[in-house]
Image 1 (cartoon, rainbow, N blue to C red):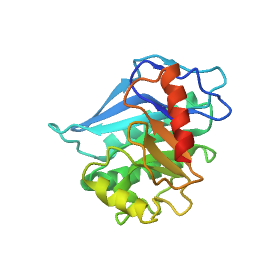
Image 2: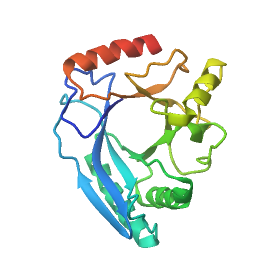
Image 3: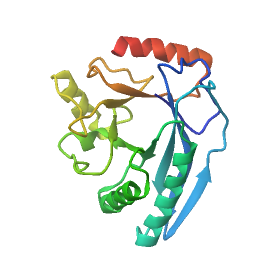
Image 4: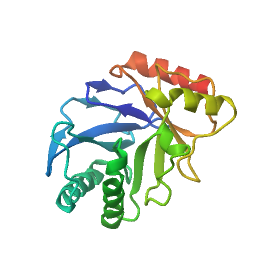
Length: 220
């Protein structure tokens, strides 16, 4: 799966039988008691038969911190549920780097989503790599997939890399099958047999798609 962010993305060079697209469909800004919605504004060019998974990004306003009250939670759930209609597969993904103080709110959002969405709709979330090691607070959540992001890891980078280099694995869930990678941060130690979500710091183009797919072959 290629992550297509808020840019003019051209992934028409993919083979839809092997590669899908997880595209940013909207961003939700949590500001005091409000939820400010920004839809995707940039074009996304894909093959006609492409598998598409909508992604919603959630961000908290630092200057006007969210109240995280039940009304705000309901609005977030409503905004996410409608994305299911835009998918070509029954799945959607949430990207929220929840702070410790926001975890209870995020848990309730996910439980509400599971109760609201059809049972056949898969719920995927991105996860900080640290969430999948000692701080695995995702256990027991009603999700089908958590994608540990093995890039832009900040202060956790050294610890995660050392864990992988010594033969460790990164699984957020007992049956974890996915990893998030970036084309500009290749890793020498990558657990095999996983579904890869691939991020590019620059907009996708036919040339960069080809280059990324060749790089992925070296990872696996």
